[in-house]
Length: 121
Image (cartoon, rainbow, N blue to C red):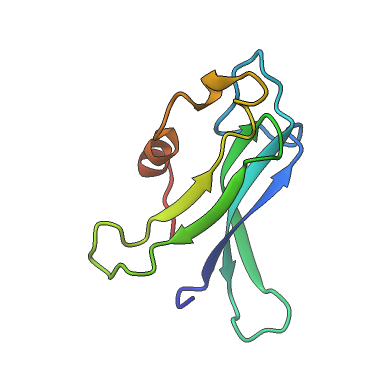
């Protein structure tokens, strides 16, 4: 953590804010996964000193099969095309099991959003 940045996900009730990735209107969201970037101002402090910003918010049918892992590729080097890209392992929120297969029919939508609308790091 040389630049003082780290990333975390957590869940919130969908009534808190509008998601960047919403479910179709006829499907009720039970939970939202939120990706947050944290910036540590003082890495030596015993208590967190810094700031945060919300990167994205995603609606899910249930809390199952949600955001499983977030990680950077540990084998890339500066200058590699993959350098600085944050990967999110995301499930279907149990949408298919609950009868909503249409929720997962657009692979790559998160990557497109990341590449065009947000800057990480």
